Image (cartoon, rainbow, N blue to C red; front, side, top):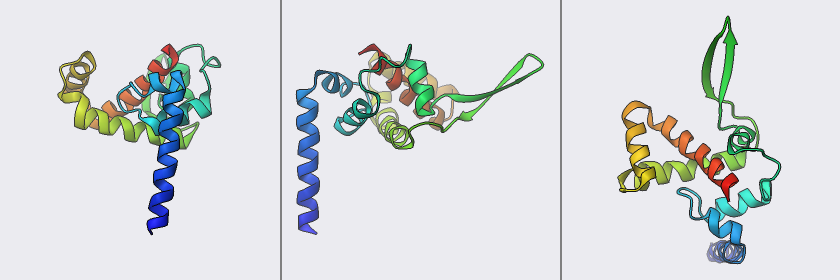
Length: 142
């Protein structure tokens, strides 16, 4: 059991070192809900993000945008599509849940005010997905 803990600590140290060395990873780690694991995973899967024209394209690739169905000129939005990279989507949702519901909503920053306002009119799970999708938008800006 101790050797497993030591191996985990060693891998965590490697991820921290990779994040410190890479300027993109350092910048990604400043986004609420994205730590060293999410930053390195995003960089490994997406690279510099040049394959996506805008952040919403990245969010759609991750499966964080709502499915749409339209008929007769009326558009209905359903839950997130859940297509794309399941690991990254899950990691971003866990990070967003921790950031949104525990920390960011209580701060006096712009994102904190946005989260508090969104929490008054939407279900907490919708807020979590919105924050995770915004991480994709922020990634594209880096």
